Length: 93
Image 1 (cartoon, rainbow, N blue to C red):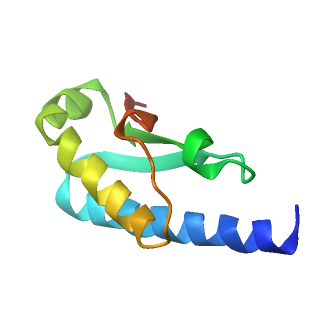
Image 2: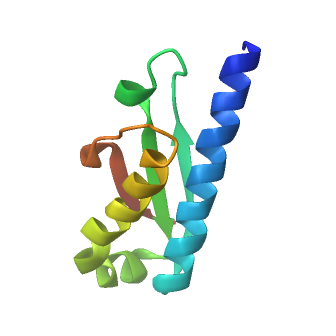
Image 3: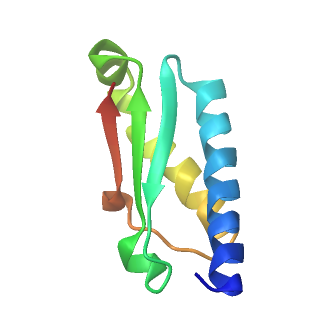
């Protein structure tokens, strides 16, 4: 990994951490999010997985998924990274 890639990875992690904390503040039983990315092709390979405490919490938050996606998209836009909403997926632990 090059120095530039390490810096970019750090930016992505910081943006997603902000998004995660914001979601935790607004949604009950949101647990955490993870991501995968190929830093050579960020826009097409970035995938964000969002996890809720259980299936009940996941189902209760169903109506808020678009809002949660917008939080993540907005944070990533702040570092000039565009992600497709379809690359953000929700799961139960």
